[in-house]
Amino acid sequence: MSQTPQKSLSVFQRRWRKFKTLKRGWYSFQALIVLYMLSLLCPLFINNKALVVKYGGEYYFPVVGQFNEARDFGQRIIGEVEYRTLARSTEEADGDDWVLMPPYAFHPNESLLDEADLPGRPPHFPTSNHWLGTDNRGRDVLARLVYGFRISITFAIGVVTLSYLLGMVIGQILGYFGGRVDIYGQRIVEIWSGLPFLYTVIIISSIVTPNVWVLILILAIFRWMGISLYMRGEFYREKSRDYVAAAIAQGESHWTIMFRHILPNSLTPVVSFAPFALVAAISSLVSLDFLGFGLPAPTPSWGEMVNQGLQNITKWHLIAFPLAALFGTLMMVVFIGEAIREAFDPKVFSRLR
Image 1: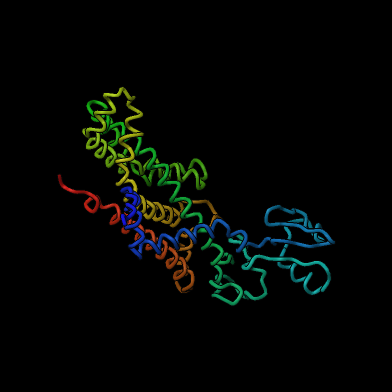
Image 2: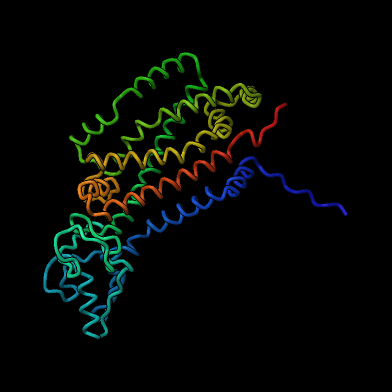
């Protein structure tokens, strides 16, 4: 009996299979994806707003809406509703009203100085209610770590995406057209790479209050030079191939040849270096926040938490937990980068002819 021939796999499919066999990188990839997806849903798990409130025979969903008047729920003050207090009062009343709070009912920017279980001045050490303690302003450390993780990963993805898009386009133009375009373009890249990054951030921070998107834009316009050089080299090599000559003979436009034919064969450095670029972006955000030129207060930030640990050196929880979160995240990203670099090694899927 003749056997059914197996379907041949593309180079990418073989690389993906190779990546999944590298357990350290594959498990880190899965863990980081799951943690980031959960962090996007953290308002449902870590928040001081109730998920569902039944009051007066009606249902409310404060986590997706806002009630500025506390009297909506019988509290005789005008202002933000204290849902933890409301939950305790409805539970003690033993009536039909009830409040469903998130599993960890604290907000990262909420000051907890009035909590009965936190006597004295902050920062407070970990307790049964506040698992990682509070910082020097009485805010929950665990809530700030989780929200800070979401901000750090989102920031890093934004910086890498924007800088790589810009660098890839510029590198493609320099490598494909060559000649004077390449010579003048290289001089511009050299001049731009010599600009002082930190001084530029300080000047911009003194003019406008930087937010996440402003910092993403600033870092992206200073991080595109490296990938542009790699793409330039890849396009110089690929444009001499026979398939490019065939595309030119068919009369296809320069942009079609660049983006449809050459670019898919030049993505190895992009994929290989992207995880390490994520590490650099996270480290840059932490450094800027540590120096006070990053995200404005009271944004949850790992760099600001590390700075608090330095100012309160005797409070071990302000040092251990932020550094452990930073170390664990960067280690997982590095493991992913090592696995991708090994899986995309061209020597594994190439033969000398």
